[in-house]
Image (cartoon, rainbow, N blue to C red; front, side, top):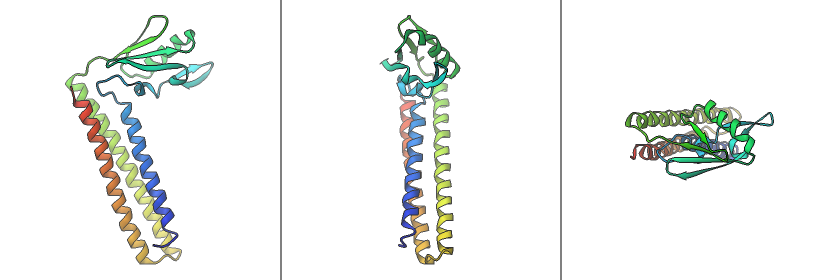
Length: 187
C-alpha cells in the first residue's frame, strides 16, 4: 500500500474510535434503573460567576441503587447545585438536609424504559452517521491521493479497507447499543 495512504487510514480509525467513545459517554448519561453518578456529569454549576462541572464543586456518589448523593465542598453551594440540577431538566428533584443533596430516582415504568431505549437508539444512530461521514471524508481524501499520483489499484484496495473498517465500527455501535438496551429493559 502507498505510504501516502496509510496515515489517512490510521486517522480514519482514530476518528471512528472516538465516535464509539463519544457514544459510550452519552449512553452512560441515560438512566438504566440504577443510580449512576455519571448521570449528572453534564450539569454545570455557577461557581463564583463561572460555570463549573458539578464534580468540581462537590463529591458525587451513588449511596444505593436508587440514590445519588452530592456533598458540596462548600455548604453555601447547596442552593446553586440544586438550582443547576432543576435547570438541567433531568427529571430528578433534589432534596437536601443542609449537609448534602440527595437525588432519589423513581423506579422505571415500562413506558419510561421504552422511552430510554428510544433515546439510546437515537444516540446510536448519531454515532452511525458520524462513522459514515468519516468514511465519506476518507474516501474523498483517497480520491485526492489518486489525483496527486497514487496508483489506482492502491486506492481501490484502500477503499475496500475503508468499507471493511466502517462495517466493523457499525457493528461495534450495534453491540454497545444492544448492551445498553438490555440494561435498560432489565427490571
